[in-house]
Image (cartoon, rainbow, N blue to C red; front, side, top):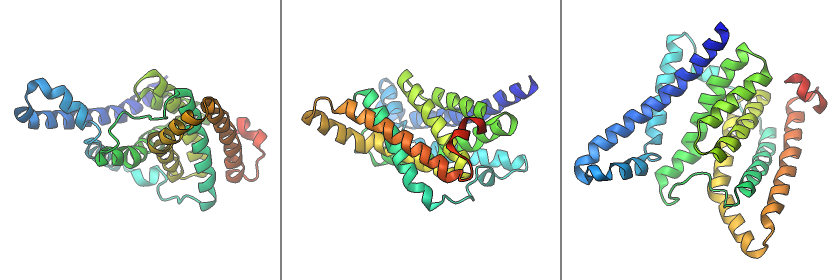
Length: 264
């Protein structure tokens, strides 16, 4: 029971810090601009600057995390396995695996796979989603939370719990579902590769596919072939399963794929 409470408080500590920093930054922005735009437009300001302010929020939050680890006598960079390089032989498999999953998500959504409601002409918002968010969320959910969980409980439970927390961190029910699955995928990729760079690469490619690549491809396809969405969905499942199996095999050379569930 003590271990359970410790893990719950640990997860809350790091997630709440992020939300508090986000609230503080947004309040400062609103207070700084309310005289120019008027109180009636405060909601519009908050909505407009939510993604634009994310790089600042993330940098501030990371700084707090780093100091917290230092106070505990630990190194956040080392704890998250940033020093372990991503092996080149993993890269193409990760790319195909992520594309497969992105195709499944996009086809299920029956829209262009646009997973973020932002203006694509906003450079700051694109940078936040394509670079800052993948790096920060992998540090928080895989580097900090997942590592602490697997230090205290079995790997299977650690993967599932951090995925649920990761999914709950997002918005609507559809996002909760697919981000939870993404959390499972990135956690396994991280655990098997021993490098958080592999998880960051997966997350980054997923965001690029969902925001830029797949919306254009699927929208064009729908105008040419009416049943193209199911085709992409089936193709995505096949690519995902094949790539997932291959990634397991190249990261666990001495173990057959049948030992997957035994290892978890």
